[in-house]
Image (tube, rainbow, N blue to C red; front, side):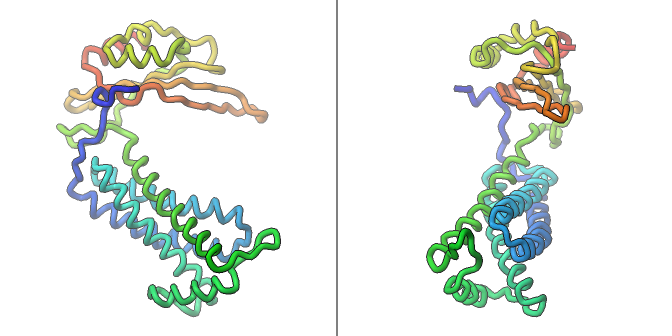
Length: 278
């Protein structure tokens, strides 16, 4: 098990503008993607495609909230997830408004909760769609609608949190650390679990001694160093195992396994690794 206190983690600071930016970005996503989602669900009669449309809808809202969180310099994961929950709910609601507007032929904009509930009850009596001769109605249809809404909300929350965790933040300079150097195609690590333990204990000898891999195909190690270029006070190292292969069309396919994510290191270790790997 990794020692969490030796890795970067968000401070929990909210960021003064982040609630405003997440609200603005979230509202834009709900309005634009909600219209697209409602029309797509209505005009595309394939339940399998609708499943992916629903996933993209929820993830799209989450991405926008995540962008707002990053732009507002939020390091508070709980708040970001809360905004994902709120706008996920609004997105599901907006999707129904958009779908009913499409059904009416752009003649009736129904947005009051009781009106939407009445329509849903009416649709549930006769069903909304069929698959393999089965038309879900009543409780079955309500359950499916609930799953769809749950997917939108959950994906909005998870994606927002994931987007906001892509980079460390320098609390002294109040900036995201984007200064990164990647060293690829290094020889594969012999024992990944042992490497993690040794690096957490400050032993970087194996990483220092990694030579170049014989090929950029197959398995190789990738090391990434990051630091704050302004104060030069925060330094991190990340390590991945990469499985590279060729597809049938000749393009390169890579599967990455993260071993170390933003392990905190000293300036001297940062310089030593940089010199060793260059």
